[in-house]
Length: 317
Image (cartoon, rainbow, N blue to C red; front, side, top):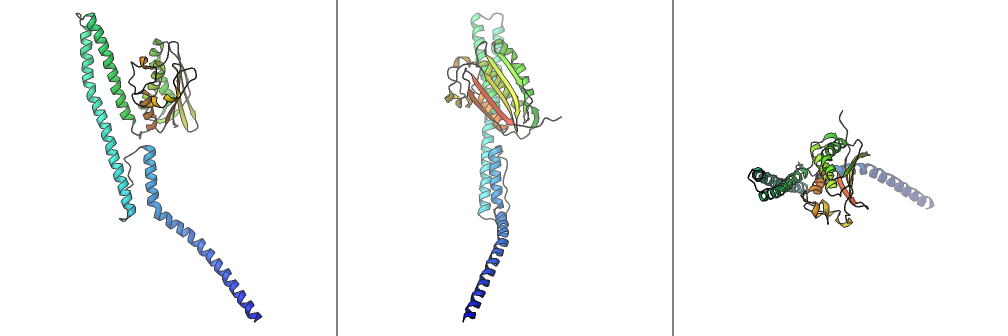
């Protein structure tokens, strides 16, 4: 009996050992097979996720998943997603075309008005009253023209920049500062420039508008004998444009609102006769269209420091 019991225990032990080894081996073989099968089965879901992430980051509504597979729940989900992207693309394109067409249509009568008023003011028999009235009308007309140009810039800047060409942000800033030198001197504002090489890529014309708006804002929202500092530099995989200026104190709670269209800083209304209220909002949409960001903070001495970050690139030789 003893031998029989020992034999049975030995057999059971061996069976348990072999069973454990077989189970471990089966698990070792089944795990990679199951993992690969799961990856293959979830590959369409991963494609949906990657497409959604790319659309969210690039704002490119022309991209589609285009899943080709059996007519199941996943196929239905991808088709609904593609349909939604198509409707969003048509909606945004329609809005942009409307703003662009309306802006272009408004330019024609404003140009005619400017010509007629200018002719009336320059007539030899024009009275002083007519000349003063004409000058006032020309100022109003010019402001409306700037407003329309701002709307066009917003429409252009809201789309993601797909045709990225390399350029140096320092060259763009230097060109803008040279153009703004006359107005800065007229307003008795000293402009300091520290322009280090800052290679990036995108549409240089749009970025020039971004820099121009920031420099004009810094000069016009300043005080006589004020100062403006413009800096370009590269930091790791980003390039920076920093525009700081003296001026009125800006409450911290108004910092975010100044990037909204048609919003101006509190207490600076008397100085906004040359603005349209779109300057900083245009800066934001252009920066975001290039995959960048824009932030602002008030200076303790008064005025603002605005920092634009864009992805770094390479300057073509």
